[in-house]
Every structure is written in structure tokens, then in C-alpha cells.
Image 1 (tube, one colour):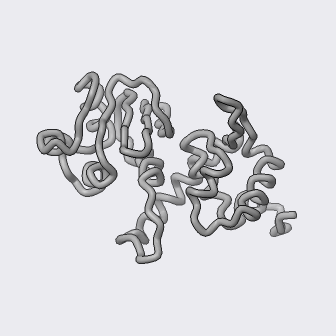
Image 2 (cartoon, rainbow, N blue to C red):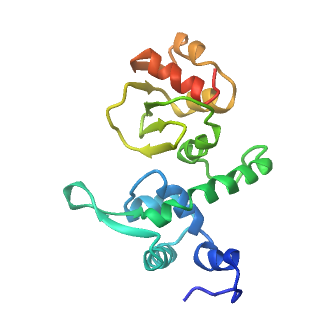
Length: 206
């Protein structure tokens, strides 16, 4: 049983549910969409299989995570409606933690997927839907004034960018311009150029 702070306070009750180590990182990863147990385990180096099972069991019991059956009978874990309500919490903590991120420590694991989740905080304006194809994974980003959604997987979008992780980092966090990356052949955009430009403008990129 999860330890309780035993305080009649909303914050204390919330921490009773999601304050254990690894819990909010699981929520962060599930914001990208349903994931298999093995994918969650692989994506969180240092988390043991026994502890992952314990955390998932707790989150399911609290109604924040549920099991789903995907294509070909694959079982995955997904956030429930209540679990998705934690997104603003994850975003706020990520924004707060950004001040401590001068650069990765030598022992840090780095995953572009976590950076894509953080892109939600970069939204400025506009509406659109674009795909991002990397050598090993694909993502798609749907954005509007009402909500910004970043998901793992390939779907049909008006525009899709094909690129590498280093190039994506240059575009998103190092100030490289989309046009210069396209001209250099490091970024290739298929589909409607206007849809891609809407994404660049919508997230304050160049």
C-alpha cells in the first residue's frame, strides 16, 4: 500500500496518489499515447520490472491508467480521462525544472520523445496537424488554441517532416531555421508546405 501523508489537504492527497518515485515519469510517457509494458520498461532505464508492475497496479487501482487491447491483440497501458488531467501538472513541473537544465549530466539518459512532450509548452498560436518521421520512430502533433496533442505513431497528416534526431534538436532547441535545414538536405517535408509553415509559426520556431 502506498504511504500516506495523512493530511486533509488537496496537495497531500494528490501526492499520496502520484508522489511516489517514477509515477509522474510514467504519466509523462503515457501522454504520448498507449504503451506496452515492455516499451514503458525500456523507456525508463533504472526502473525495475517489479517496481514498474507495482506502479502500474497502483495507477490502475486509482483510476488514472487502464489496460487497453490494441491491434493484433496487443495489451497496452493508457491514461484514463482522470489520468489525462495530470497533463497540466506535468507541464508545470517541466517548466519549473527547465531552469536546472543547462545541459545533460554525464549519467543522464536523453530521449527525444521527452523533448517532444515539452514542445506543448512552446505553443504560441494557430491550428494544424503535422507528422515527424525519425529513423526509428514517428510522432504527430495536432495543435489549436484549445489543446496541443503530441502522440507517438504514424497517421495521415497534411504535412510530414522526415529528419534525424540531431536535426530535430537543432530546429526545436538550437535556433536553426527550417528553411536552412531543408536547403541543406537535413530536413525533408512532404505534403502541404503551408501546413508545415503553420507549425513552425505556431511554435515560435524559425
